[in-house]
Image 1 (cartoon, helix red, strand yellow):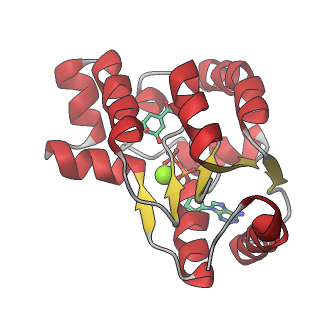
Image 2: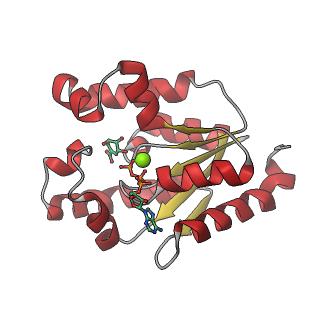
Length: 175
Ligand SMILES: Nc1ncnc2c1ncn2[C@@H]1O[C@H](COP(=O)(O)OP(=O)(O)OP(=O)(O)O)[C@@H](O)[C@H]1O
Ligand SMILES: O=C(O)C1=C[C@@H](O)[C@@H](O)[C@H](O)C1
Ligand SMILES: [Mg+2]
C-alpha cells in the first residue's frame, strides 16, 4: 500500500495534479498514458486507430500488472477503472484518489484537444453520458474523493498531500 493513484475522467487534472504532488511529496511521478506512449513508440490516437480500443485497454492492464515501483505517484488514464482487474490492482497496491470535476468544466478543457481519441469521435452528449456511466466506478474505486470545483491546481495538490500525510501513520509507510 505505498503508491498514490490519481483517477478520474479525462481533463479532471490527474496529470497536472500528479506532477505537482510529486514535487511536493518528493516522490517519483509516472503518467500511465505517457508510459504507454513511451513503451509502444506510438501516440494514443495512433494506438486507437491502428489497433483499436481493446488493445489500448490491454496495454493499461499490462502496465498495472507489470509495474514494480513503490513510493510513487501514478496518474492514470481516464478509462482505467473500466476493468475490474485494474480497479482491484489499484485498491490493493496504493491509495486511490478520485479528482471529481464537474462535467461542464471537463468539457471546456477537453473538447478541442486532438490527443483524446474518444473525444474526437463523439458528441458532447455522448461524452457526458460516458462521464455519468463511469462516475460510480471512480467513486467506488477511490479511497478518497477530492472535489476540484473552485479549487486551483495548487489547492488541490495541497489538499491531496494533506490527505496522504494524514493516512501515512495508519496505512502507509512513506519515509
Ligand atoms: N483545478 C484546475 N484548475 C485549472 N486548470 C486545471 C485544473 N485541473 C486541470 N486543469 C487543466 O486542465 C487541463 C487538463 O488536465 P490534465 O491533462 O491534468 O487532465 P487528465 O485528468 O490528466 O486528463 P486525461 O485523462 O485525458 O489524461 C490541463 O491544461 C490542466 O492544467
Ligand atoms: O477516458 C478515456 O477512455 C481515455 C483517457 C485518456 O487518459 C487516455 O487514456 C485515452 O485517451 C482514453
Ligand atoms: Mg492525463
